[in-house]
Length: 113
Image: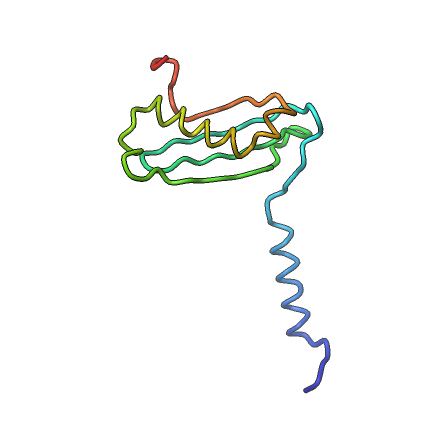
């Protein structure tokens, strides 16, 4: 078996390099830096994305998604939201302790509250 760098290997390397350049940026938030938490509740799924805004660009920190199972999809909207927030706060507790977190959601909770 012969090892060497040929045109095929160079093309594969270039493809890999282009792919890695297109991946979303990830960041670590500085202590006390304000964060945004996007919380989307759809019938059976809750999606959460935590981002930090740096230089007018939102940079991804953490993402999680979980399915509502059993009777949970039948919960009223407010209960789904509360349940989702409990899970999120448990999982992302260090972020909530060290940062001001603004929660943005696709639900109109003002009418419910």
